[in-house]
Each structure stands twice: as structure tokens, then as C-alpha cells.
Image (cartoon, rainbow, N blue to C red; front, side, top):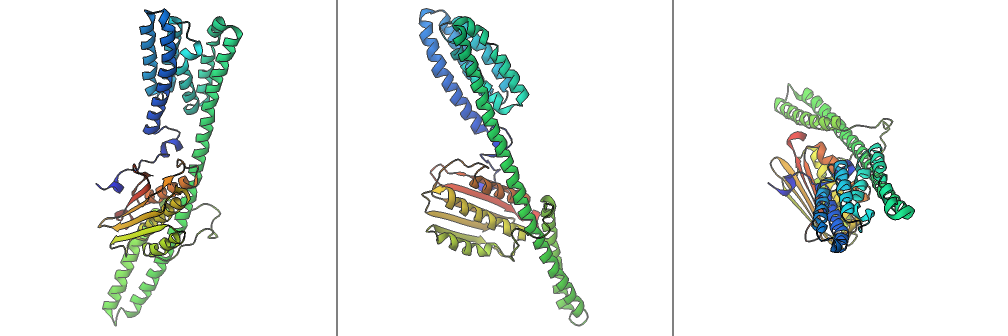
Length: 389
């Protein structure tokens, strides 16, 4: 199986849905578990020197907290309850460990609850964690209780800040998808109108020569059949997308006559004018493709080159390969730069990737976009022709 035929692994897709991707969940676990083992483990080791028999039990509870953090992305409320119980047990075994330190894992999980669960749930979690202010008051007086309350409120607030970021990301993603669908709908609408106009002309020509030159009439009818098949494919895509209300005036980009892939050299020249080396390769029979696939391939290359110019630091070369096979068109764009920031739907690069995803989705294809291990950024797409024909 080719690389571009695999399912996409978009780094920002899970974030846009309010979920953590597997990679982000692993990073969260490793980071939080490392913090708990380092801070709390060290405190237990120091405090346990005077309680040799209790220290192994306390250390086992610390390890249990670090292990439980593995599931905080899936079930943060349950993990919060478990870590709060084990943290209080550590504090009961070794009172020299501060309550804030003993409940460090619970504070981390409270932040996750606040960021990923409905606000009413996180508020209840905050209230439950605040009850520990009573033992904190008994151990350290008003200062101890104040420090504890400030700590849990800070953890909850940090989660709310991350939640607000995610909401903004979702809004940006939805807006980008709507804009891209509207753009695609306008293009497909004009393609279908163009195809139907050609069919009308061919039908009139066939009627004029039907009796005198039947072979020429058959050619016109075959052209009508080909155009009708193409128009049906375009209409399928038009039904999947939508045209926003109030946009009947034809605002926005207007459709230009194809073929689109044939104009990739012009696109490459505009990028070369900036000093970038563009290596363009077209393979297979790229002429006569379904218009939607032709447009999608061109737009993906266009967006990928734009992202290279905007976001790939130190990039001076980009390779573009478009290959037409028997049943699909494969697009691969690779640059040799390094990304200056993480790509997310809230950034320009992210908006470009959202547009690529939407175009690929509408033709039933697959997309992969991400950095390469040895440096550079790769965009690969597989566009099947059977659903667009």
C-alpha cells in the first residue's frame, strides 16, 4: 500500500473535536508521571528516612498514582478520585510530606478534568478537592489552607484556559470548513454549468447532422454521454458540499476552464520567482481527468506550496509529484525546511490543511500531512477517480 493511500493522521483533528490524540495523551502521561515521580517521589524518599517501615508503602502509592495518570485522558474523573485517595494515604503515612505535594497527581488530573469535561463536572471536582482545605488547615493553619485552595483553583483555572483555547480552535476549524465547502461548491457549480452548456451544443450539432452524417452525430452523442457522466460526478460533490445563503451573486473565486494539473508549471514558476527551487514531476495520463479530481490535485499542491513559503523556515527546495494511475491520482509535496511552530487549525497553515482535508473528503480520498523524521514537511494525497466519474 502506498503512503498516500493510508488513513490521515492529522495532529490537530482530535484537538478540534475536544479530544486528545493518542500522541498527545502519551505525552501528557509521560510528562505528568515524570513530574509526580520526581517531586513526590523525592519528598517521600526524604520524609521516609525517619519512617523506614512506612516508606515502601508510600512509595508504592506514588507509583500507583503515576500509573493511574495513564488513563487520565480517557477517564479523568475516576483517576482524580483514585489519585486523591492515594495522595491522602501518602500524607497520612508520612505527615512530613505536605498535603499539596502528596496530592500533586490529583491536582494535575483536576486540570485535565477542567479542560476536557463539562464545566458543571469540573466545578464539582473543584469543590470536592477544596474539602481538603480542612486537613490542610489542621496541619499548617490558615497559611496551609490558603496555599491549598490557591493551588487547586490555579489547577482548575489552567484547565479552563485550555478549554477556551480548544473552543476557539473548534470555531476556527468550523469556519475554515464552511469557507472551503462554499469555495468548492462555487467551483463545482460552474463546472456543471459549463459541462451542461457543452452538452446542449453537442445535442444541437447531432440533431443538425443526424440524417446526412450519422457518424458525426454518433460522435456528438458519445461526447454528450461523456459529459453527462462527468456532470453526474460533479453533482454528487455539489450535494455533499453546500452553497451559503445570500451568495447567489457569484462572489468569491470564479471557476476557470481546465485542465488544472496542466497549469502546475505556471504555479511552480510563481513560487520559483521567490527564490525557491521547485522540482515538478507529472506521471501517467494526467489529461482528461474528472474535473473535481483535477481541481483537487491542483488546489492541494497550491496550498502545500503556500504553506512551505509561509511556515517552513530555511526551506529552499520543494518537490512536487503528481501521478495519475489507473484508478486514482496521487499527489506528494515535500519540502526541506523546518516548521516554525506547531500547525493547528487556528493558524494559517492549519486553515490550509483544513482546506486540503475537505477537498480530499469530497472526492472520497485520503490525506496525510506532517513533518518528516529527517526534517522537512510532507503532504501526500490519494484521489480516487471512480467516485468522481
